[in-house]
Each structure stands twice: as C-alpha cells, then as structure tokens.
Image 1: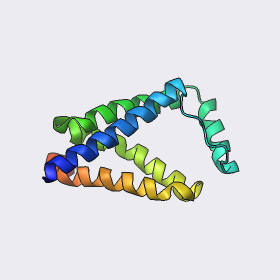
Image 2: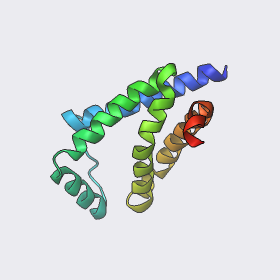
Image 3: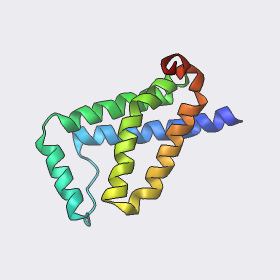
Length: 125
C-alpha cells in the first residue's frame, strides 16, 4: 500500500515539475495579477539572464521525468532538491502565501530521499 501511495504522489510531483518546466519555455500559465514588488524584481532579474530560466526549465523537466519512474526516482529527488530549496526560500522571503504548498512539496521530496537513503549511503561515506 505504501508503494502505491508513494507512486501516486511521485507521479503528481513529477507532473507538476514537468508542467512547470514546460511553462518556462512556452509561457502558457498566466502570472498572478497581484505579486509583491520584490518578487517582480527577482523575476525580471532572472529573465534578464537569458540562459537561466531555460536551464531551470530543463532541470525541472528531466527531474520530473526521473521522479515519476520508480527506478530513477532517487536521482530525480537529488536533482530537484536545489530547486525545491529555492522555491521554499522564495516563499519564505517574498511570497508567504504560497508557503503551505512549498512545504508540502519539500516534504514529498524529503520523503523520497529518505525512502531511497540506501542508494545514497556510498556517497555519504
């Protein structure tokens, strides 16, 4: 039962990041109308660096795909971890309204990391 729950959650998590990565290329999701000024400045800075958002988008797509596949889920969880840290920090500093969702996503990522801890054991020695 635990494996089925983990698969469904991992599938949704992976699809969320694939969607987020694709949006960085095709811009099909509208930006919220009400955004804090600091967040607007940060987003403008990120888009000024022409290669940054496509890089993040590619990492999100690749990690999302890896996260969905049980055999590569541990690798996907490690790859998406820095992006998750950035998401959580962004919500702590700039957009506290989105903090509950960011915490849930971070918890899912940490759960997958914990479930695959034996795969990381040789790295941590």
